[in-house]
Image (cartoon, rainbow, N blue to C red; front, side, top):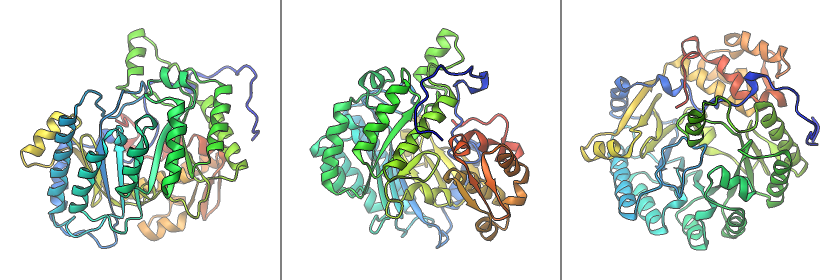
Length: 448
């Protein structure tokens, strides 16, 4: 594929190729809309039995605070909490985790990986981070963890904050850069500006983080071909260990959606899907020329032998995830769960001595097979023997129509032993994966 951006007038875009409201990014399976409150007791039941020795344990803590809400954000975040309210929230999260840590399923286990997500974890002060992580380590040991990942908004970072983040044991720092143009950052509701990106990144490089990732988003409001080319060029010049590139979506419950709804619009004011795919492909080509390797539908990595995404890979292969905090998603003993989505009910449940779980889903053996296969398709290559050995199911037979469709449409190369996505298939893998869902999950499924 050409590495030159096409500046000619775009061809007519089909209606189904325009960006409309909704998610198509596949982050779990079965979809969240199938998780139900009546299955919450299954989580409580699994906590009372010992865990299998071969299942790694991850810890996730959700920090729902931000300086401002991005126009495309659908996560549970708060922009109006003071230090006292933040401390009360941290205390509630730790009391939640302490209850889990005393159960037969968690007691005595060490964390294989830890992830701080949000919101904006770097919104917390260094004393707040130290209090949080000290109490977390008292519940579940981090000693020997393969990865401690931490999301950060560049504008919240200074030398003191970055030093504190490194000192609490973070190994993977992920900077939410998104774009380098101040007008685009502002018009999309981002709190940081370009100068803060450069300052934060340069100092972070001096602190010995094992892995610095930056996030970019293709197709933001007001983004142009020329801007995207400049964005990619600057990201290549930075030289991060990894880059994660998302294609802009407009989920429900975002300020952008609310504006569209008020104006009676269906199509979002962002780039269409063919444009976004072309821009990501251009970025991939530019990073490859600079020595990077494309390792998934969204990521390029400078040194694949050294840089691993432990959180992603372990979760996709069925690791346990002890998730804490409002609206957070977890996975224990084959059961998905999500906490209360509002901070009030969440903290009330913790205060009452209960697990603050809102909904859950107990997966079947077949669903766990489908989940791992579709998620790992995002890596671009799957060997069927792996699934035959782990689940007793051959994907070549189970998904024969879907796989043959990919091959016939030129999205993948298919053999009896494996499937490899071509660039065009990789760039739209989330759209294609919906066909791999079990029949009962293909309709009325929303990823919220």
